[in-house]
Amino acid sequence: SQTIHQWPATLVQPVGSPLSLECTVEGTSNPNLYWYRQAAGRGLQLLFYSVGIGQISSEVPQNLSASRPQDRQFILSSKKLLLSDSGFYLCAWIRIGGSNTEAFFGQGTRLTVV
Amino acid sequence: DAKTTQPNSMESNEEEPVHLPCNHSTISGTDYIHWYRQLPSQGPEYVIHGLTSNVNNRMASLAIAEDRKSSTLILHRATLRDAAVYYCILRDRNSGGSNYKLTFGKGTLLTVNP
Image 1 (cartoon, one colour):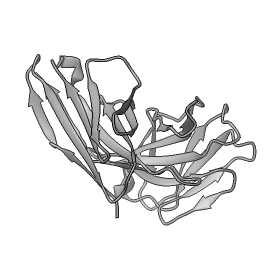
Image 2 (image 1 turned 90 degrees about the vertical axis):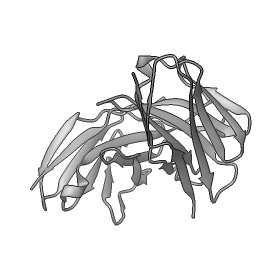
Image 3 (image 1 turned 180 degrees about the vertical axis):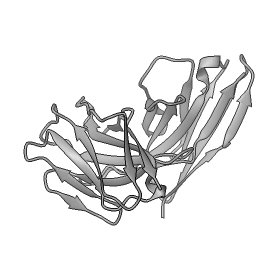
């Protein structure tokens, strides 16, 4: 079965520090991978998605970047965190087949920038 | 991209049915209607999806209007564990053809009273 791993679960970082969040998928190949962010009390905002190694699409201009060094690995990064980068970050894998584009989400990383 | 409109919040009593509405008046002919729910401090999970016909699964039922401009997620007997944010979303297909995005709105916060 397919699983998605995301870590760490929580993170407290000072303003100006770098960030690296990692997401890996098991049990599938060539997945479409996605990074979402959820601010407190708000919906999910799509940040990046990737359809293959080295292929990154950015949905909104921001202080973050994403990379996909391997087929089942998706990394969210920042060189210098801002207070506004705080939020709940979710990695997702979307299975595309037939009528169903069911998405599988990781457990999320709660990032607090202080 | 086709958008959806949902009430910000709804309340229900335990053991009673819940009807969660969603409007999607600009839906295209090939858009599938998906429902996800997000329990507190977790990533969203798939609930159900459909195209034209009503659908049932172990979690819920999906009733789709004949003109497809609205749909209703039905929880037949709400439990306390059903308290969550429920998202109604349409499958996006961008100009790339094979790139699928799932765009989430703010959803409906369902409160279940004991």
